[in-house]
Image (tube, rainbow, N blue to C red; front, top):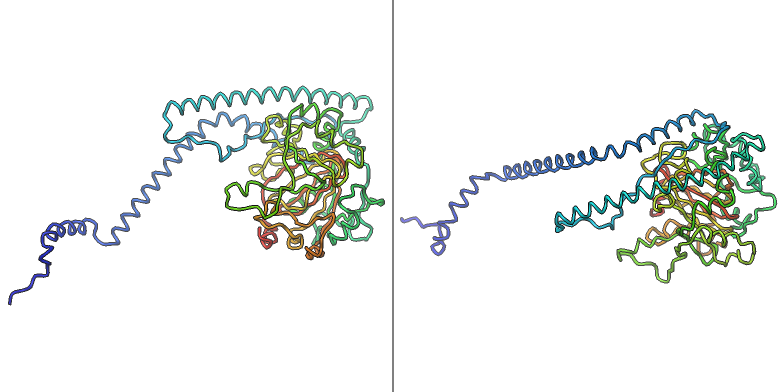
Length: 517
């Protein structure tokens, strides 16, 4: 019997040429396992080549820039040595403070800056490099000129201070303490309910249950935030410790390491800045006629909002929502003219208010802040916990009556008051649910939706259960706020405040996470 062919007669020609090719392919690659192995080997080789190339490029860049970083390393080393001497704690300083010349690190380039596209020719790239070099040279020249200009002003006012000290015979350390005390118009005391004592409730390490807290409604009913006049008794619901730099330095360090809030009073470098900034004409001459960012509100309440959340168009602002404040620019003299108004009718809660701002990283004319506020320089110190995670210096000058709505920040924060008075109402992160925050997606996310000067407890019933404490900062005080602690701020008079952040901690993240952040 003749065997039937398994091949399709109509496709005989095609099969005759396809079969040897398929057989060759199977012989070359073999099984599926071998194919997978070859792919993995190729991937590993490509990965190694990419890593070697990247390390080579980064290494060459680092070698080329090492010479430019060396002076900065020297300056950082000098500052660290100075801070180590300070930590040995010899607070008596009878001479003028040593001034370490320090220029802040350049801020990182913004994401929206143009990149060099692949289709650019070599000539245009060289031209761009030349322009960048010219810009760097101009920037260095500007910094040198500003430094000389700043030094001339600083020397003039330092001479006035030395002359005053020689006339009255007081040491420099004593003189600056006397000056700061003269600016503190009132002596605030804890409320007389026996629940808090600054000596008995401030041991060497923070005790369980620190800080003390009371019902928030009770605090604001005792002293309404819209009222800048303190209670007649000057008693407040103080729940945090106030440490004297000379007597309690190590205590303050223990509380800082425990990540709880407290106030440090009369740090020598803070007092030096207090004295300069309150000399008539000093800030006006220092800030010249340069316009700076200023927040404007049609009343005394200031609610931060973030317009960048809606740039990409993926999110939309809530229906009917309008920005609570606007950002404008004005000079210090223009702001001061508005802030120093004495007519009570012009300072009413429904009148316009302005919040003047300075930043130590984004304005060429504000680099002097790193010499004015030496305690906030980005080197490890009592005030700078993690230098590599600093976010510059931010100053806010408040006119009487300005209220910054309750909110939390995502990093640890030091707040130094350099003139005037500010009232802070603080809340533990575990109060997050009771403070009725705007959701994360809201333009004013992480801020309380409650108007604390007139709370609507029917709309926000959880606010009845909120707990807080309060402290009034005066000239020469520095408040430590751990990560994610809530704070509500009232300017009791014209004041100068600067703050600096350095690093994030995670002790309280679960409380904030439960609120949707």
